[in-house]
Image (cartoon, rainbow, N blue to C red):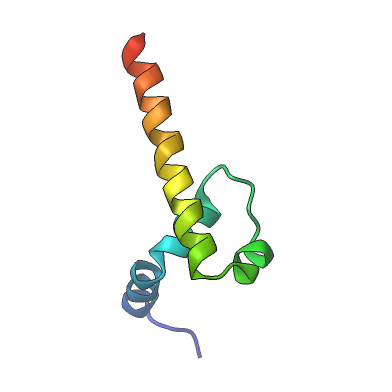
Length: 62
């Protein structure tokens, strides 16, 4: 049985810290993601935040 669109969205929001990493340009696969623990995910999300901040600063310089 397929989950509803509403349930899929709820799950995606609940697991956003994982999906965010998977959907980023960090070249992390779903298999890689499943090997990561909560500390790894927190660090990857922090690194992604830093990367985004650096990109925004570079764009603002132009």
